Image 1 (cartoon, rainbow, N blue to C red):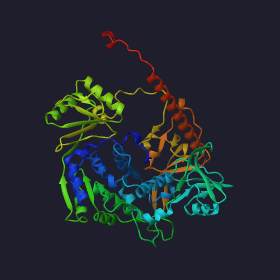
Image 2: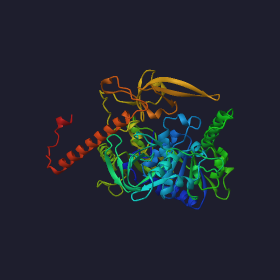
Image 3: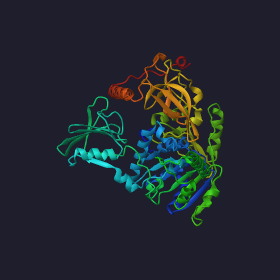
Image 4: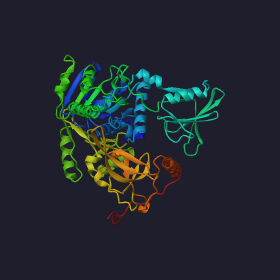
Length: 568
């Protein structure tokens, strides 16, 4: 599960090279005027970089599915700290989705940014946009802020949290719970990294502080705690229907990644949803959806830009777009080939690019890595430099500019004379400059396909811990069947995970492959284990900082240059 705090948070906010191109400047001019655009010939790696600069007044980026949305989010986070993910629900089995708490947390956090901040870009899927929601004013009202010095009765706070979906327990163990002990009120909101402890003096809030769920010790004093609903209240048919689109400013542009695929996926989800509930005549809690065509019509009333590699999807947009504002344009962009096993081909292409006066940029995940990469290229006789170093090229010298930023893939823009590549293209699939040695100790392995695990294998779920894979079980509801991964836990509980959600589990492999102890499905042991590991990692980081600080202050020893025999 990918969340909003992941993907090189500390390495973001680097310069987006696309902002300097005529292609982007033309697009910005048209969208600032309220235009509607369709671009054919835009490769996947270029699309997010064209959309990202519009985060300055909020922007919405729509993808076909979660896999593509995660790729776009990763590319956006290479250049911005204001890229957020709004995850979709499984509309048929959303109550059984094991990621429920994490989905609610991510969605709530995304809506909070939309309401409280002035800029950002939200990446989501077209099916996620289809859900009918309460309006943003109703969402604001559902938030509750507790401040030091405010007067409120414990019973009133308890009633408020119960209305917000919180559950009272003797001692909180997870998000969405609260507990009361005398004048102490503990609560764990979905948007919090740690729970908060609110102490009362009579009816007055005397203090608020974060505390550790494992040790119960105080972590940090705060002046206020903003509490979000523990669950989504959903849409009431008696109210006006809103979509996520209504949370954005009216002039915020919408970016459509392959519009034909978006509409196709929306229609598939709608058909599956209608078939599922067709035979259900009983009134029960369920989500309500907008039709894909309704949403497309609403987008047609806004500023938008659609990107298509092969130029498909134009017909569906022409029907809803404003003919006076709509413009179609073809762009010549290409993906970069892999040079991993053909270093000679790279040097040949480089000579051609420099001859044709291309600007060549090579992206590396970190500043240190970029510096080393530039040095290695110079050792191979290729002029290269990092913009933030003193090793700038001589005037008129043709050089590769090695930049910092984690891009998945590169691209070339013929009209702009721009060639961008990454380590993935330069060295092959691995981002390592050197081949990593195989580790003797077994480690957890991310599962990419169900063929990689067998019945009886130990697996690790990111939020529930270690269990035993029991195979695939088909669940039939109202005539619609769906496959689920079944995982057995130590207390006899079974976890059912949709087969499409493999990103949340790993195949277990512990030290010397010892048989692990199973976690309890409803226990707190796994959370405590993760907390201990996080504490140990922080302690190691502190030790390393002290060590490097000491080394920095000590005088070094200059060794003589290697002899000919040492270089062999």
